[in-house]
Amino acid sequence: MGKVFVTRQTPGRAIEMLHAAGHEVDVWHEPTPPPPVVLAAKLAASDAALTMVVDAITPEMLDGAPNLRVLANMAVGYDNLNPAEAIRRGIAVTNTPGVLAETTADMAWALLMAGARNVVASERDTRAGGWTTWSPTAFLGQDVFGATLGIIGLGEIGEAMARRARGFDMRILYTSRTRKPEAESRLGLEFVSLDDLLRQSDFVSLHTPLSPETRYLIAARELSLMKPTALLVNTARGGVVDQDALIAALRAGSIGGAALDVTDPEPLPLDNPLYSFPNVVITPHIASASLATRSKMAEMAAANIIAVLAGRPAINPVA
Image 1: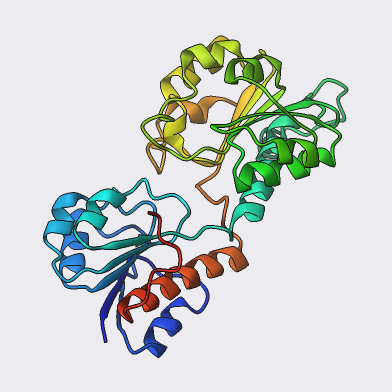
Image 2: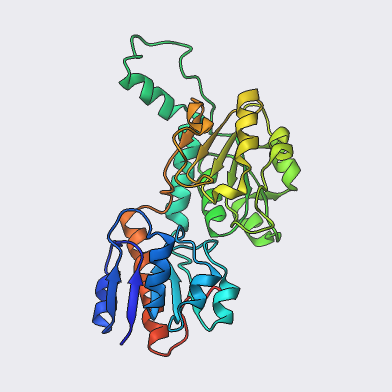
């Protein structure tokens, strides 16, 4: 049938599905992404590829892959490639929408809670022997119940975050490219400008895709608008935040802290100043990392490949 390159080992039945459909499957078994020269060579020899969001696919790679018919990204985002360049060459591009919103919102909420209540800093201190007595002043955090949450980007994940906030009786502000009156009514949301959201929120959670318009959406000016006690939560993309500006704000104490599942670059080098702040939580891009969700994502990507190589329309085309 076809040759399929899978750029990483995946959970679930994705590989089994591809084999069952009669395809020859080549899986990259290293824990790190295939180097660009290897990725280019693998794409050149393949009819399809199941790719990750960290696999940077260039137009030059696509030029060297005349038989490639589909790139199935195991992610909702696809900022690792230019869909228009692929489609112009007759290559379908697919993603995995609708399966990771709740899991990602769980992680965003976990980061919010960890940052608000100094969970990571206190746990590290405990392991290091710092817990010598009960203290009325140690690791004082912020109350989440009844606080104000600002959601930037009200897609599936943003709405899922709002549902969690309702259980904590929070005032929920949001800003988005389009206003959503139905969601406002259903979830008790307030639509405000980005500046007003930043000024009023105790917690700011980012849920916008990375695009030329959203790169450095949160930069020095925006950070200066935030409360000095406010926590910035990012489970979107690292490039949505100007990290140099974030570091400067943390050094100045002009915001309360940050909880980041995504950085720029990834992985974040160990000498990056962000690691030095006790009020910063950093996790390795694991917001969708539940076994069930990652399995569904891989299987959805495989299903898209099977459909396209069988001559059927892609199930989840990005354009």
